[in-house]
Amino acid sequence: MRDGRAPAGAPADYARKSLVERVTGRFYTPDLLAGDLAARMAAELATSLGTGTRSSGRIRVGDPFVGDGQLVLALLRAIAAQPVLAAQRILIDVRDVDEIALARAKERISTLASELGLSLTLEATVGDSLSQRSLPPHDAIITNPPWELLKPDARETSALSDGEREQYARWLRSRCEELDQRFPEARADKSWAGWGTNLARCGVALCLNSCRIGGVLGMVLPATLMGDQASVSLRRCLVQRSALVDLAVHPSEARLFDRVDQPVVVACMRVGAHGGTVGTVRHFNKNASVRVEHSIDWSERGLAASDYALPVAHGSEAAAHLTRAFAGLPLFSMLEGEGLIWAGRELDETRVAEKLSAVGAFPFIKGRMVSRHEIVEQPSAFVKPELAEKIRSAAHRRLVWRDVARASSKRRMIGTVIPAGWVAGNSLHVAYATDGDEERLLAVYAVLMSMVFEAQVRTRLSTGHMSLGIIRSARVPKLDKRMRQRLGRAARSALSREPGAEHRLEVETARAYGLDRDAMGLVLGCFPKLTRSEVDAILAPAAWSGR
Image 1 (cartoon, rainbow, N blue to C red):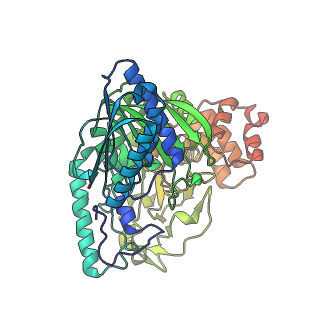
Image 2 (cartoon, rainbow, N blue to C red; image 1 turned 120 degrees about the vertical axis):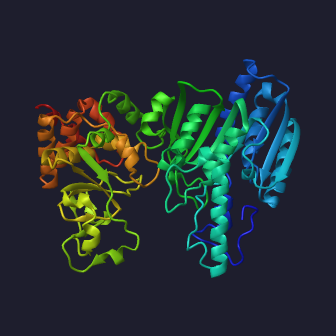
Image 3 (cartoon, helix red, strand yellow; image 1 turned 90 degrees about the vertical axis):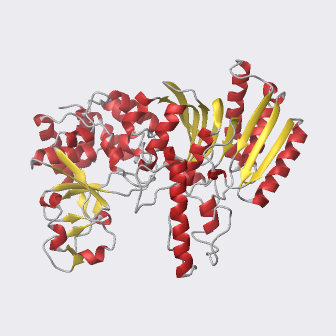
C-alpha cells in the first residue's frame, strides 16, 4: 500500500478521499503555508551562517514527502532572497512514493533553480521514506508528512471481498508494528481498539532524526498532534531535542487543503537547541491574517505539567497567563490523588443495544441527552442488572460532562448532575465525591462548568474529545469548607435554572480562583462566541461589588 497501490477493488472515493490518498498522505501544500514557512526557515539558516555556527560552502535540503515539490520551491525562492544562502552550493534530496509526482517535482525544482541562478545538485528517490529510521543529515528539512491514522475502516474497504479485507487488515497491522518499532518516539501513548499508529507522528520522528544538530526543521502538520493524548511522547521528544522558532496556527475554517476540514499548524524549529528557550506562536484567522501573536516557554518546566500540549486554540495567550497565575493551586488530578474525587467513565457504548433493556432499575444516559446544567432527554432504556451492578460509581450521585464537544462550540464543558442508580455511557465522563459530601460534589461541579476552568482546558485541546488527561492537568481553587458552601450554592442555582444563575456561577468561581473583574475580562476573551449581553452580565460592576 505504501508504494501507492491499493488492494484490488478498493473504493474510488471515501469521504471524498481515496483509500490510497488516506494511507499515503497524498495531499499537497498550498502556497500560503509554503511561502511563510520557507521565509522563516531561510532566515534561520542565514543567521546560522552569519554567526558562524556552521561552516559555509554547501547546504543540504530535504523533503522526504515531496509531493508536487511546492515546499521545496518556496524554500529555494527564500534562499535566493538571502545573499549569504544564495552563494552556497545547494544539494536537494527529495523523495516520494508517487513516481509521477516525484518526476514533476524534480522538473519544477530544476527549472526554478536555473531561473534563480542557484548552484544546485538534485537527488530524487522513489520509495517509502518511512522504511528507514533516518536519512543522511540535512541542514534543512521542509515537509508535509502524511497525516493519516492507520486503522481499518469498513467504509473504506466496503468494495473489497472478505479475503481482500482480511489481507488488508493483516498488512495494516504489520505496517503499524513495523513503524512503532522503527519510531518508538512516535508510538501512540494511547490507542483505540489497538490502533494508534499515525503517519504524521512517524514523519515528524523521521525528520527530527534526519536533521543535523543546529539544522532547521519546517513541517506542516495536523493541529491534533499539538495536544492529543496519543502524542505526548512525541511532543516531549520535540521539546528535548529542538527549540521552537515559530508555530503558525490556522483554523479549520480557512479550508487550506481540499477535502480536509481540520486546524493546521506550521512549525519551524532548530534541532539540537533546547533548554528554556522561548518560541513564537501566531494565530491566523480564516482570511490568513495574524489575529494574535504571543510567546511560549519551550521547556520541560513550562510544558511538562500539561503533557507538553501546545497552545494552539483560541485564547491561548490568556490561558498562558492563567497557567502562570495559578501555579500555586492544586491540579484536578490532586483531588483524585487525595481520594476526594473519583473520575472516569462507566459503560462502553460499543454494541450498546445488547447491554440495554426496555425496563429495569438502572436508567441509561449518554452524551446527547445532556446539556449545560440540565438533562434534555430523559432515559428510555435501562442497563441490564448484571452489567450495572459491576459499575461501582453508579451507586453515587455524579457530575457528568460530554466526551465530545467541537472546538467551534460556544462552550465545551457541557455537563450536569445525575442521580445515583443511573449508568452513564462512555460518551460521558463522570466524577463523584468519594466520601459522599454533597457540597464537595457541587463545588467541583461549579468549578468544572466555569469559564475559568474551561479556559485552561479548551486552549490545550486539539480535537473534539474532552480528554480526561487534559482535564486532570487543569488547576482548581482550594476548596475549604467555606468555599465549598459558596460554590455549592452557585451550583444549585445553576442546576435549578434560576435567572442569572449561570452568570453568578462564573463570578463566584472566578473569585474562588483569586481573579478580579479585570482578570475575568481576559478569561472571557477565550470564548469568542459569547454575546455582548453575556459579557456585560458577567462583568457588571454590581456582580463584583459584594462578597
